[in-house]
Length: 441
Image (cartoon, rainbow, N blue to C red; front, side, top):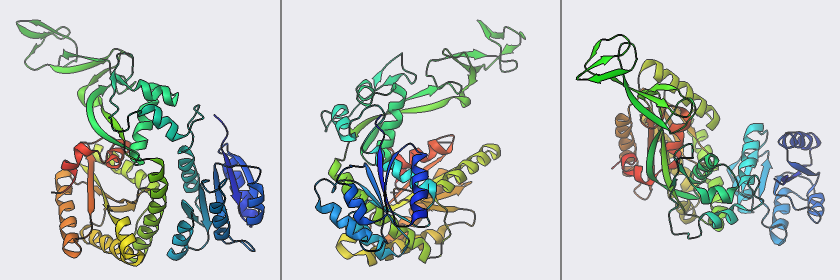
């Protein structure tokens, strides 16, 4: 894999040194500039994969640098993340309008900055390929209108494989599943249900056989007229089903087995769509963040929300109760913003936050994720009760504004997963075949 390059531009010596330390630790090749003019001169000899650009600088500020980058054919397509100490909405929107694909406010959180940079760079290169993501898509989806379906394989760990995708990505058959699912979460692929397989809880292998055992001592049973235990010799009316993994030999009960859903995939976006939507998403994120702040609703960030879901699922397991997570988004916010402007969009965001607040319990938790979905954690709430709540929220909001396309999705423990990764992945995917179940009627 070629080492990816980042150009850091900041007039503050301490901030520049801190950024250099952070990204060198992530194994990126770093170029640094203390001014906008120095950055433009450096770009005559280097072509970085990403630019992190301070906005407030003397002489030539970051906005002027952005404008000059967009006028140069050699630099106009280099993605830029803007750094700004100003947190007002107008500045954020100006930065995005002038060509930055994202922004980070100072003082920044190290992990947030690292994750955003990593996500941007993953759009342009994958380990061992040296090809752009769009070159890879051309190989995986030669016919853009066709679904990519898995092939049955007794050699593969999950019993299915995507040989075409594995070859294009030059990765293992198992790694392919994670990459395809990530592209669905990123909004590049659509996904539809294909099959489900049971996996061993010890080695995640599909090669499992079932046999009956004694419910008293879990030894094998003999079938000769009436069932008898081979070990304790007791008569058995209803044996217990036991599952044995032929890969590692582990014996498990049905409740311990993992369920792996297998899907088909289809390309739904092209490169131009993604570049346009990256800007729109960043605008929506700034509107949502401001709406939460101005309404006085306490919320936690995405990482803290994930940790909280993990904690609540552990509690649910020990207490034998349910848990549901809800995501809410104005699906046509971009169109409303373009038609009516940012003030109305902000007003709509604030309205929906206040509607959600009206129905929240004291111990419910609110957050928003990188896809600008408002997230609600609903401990001790069954899916059916959460669906009633979703219907109330949608009905209440429709009375206020019928122009808005409000999308609500639900995922619950244990129906949709046994840990936070499975539950949140099901929520993120927004799978077409499940939307009838998830969308309030």
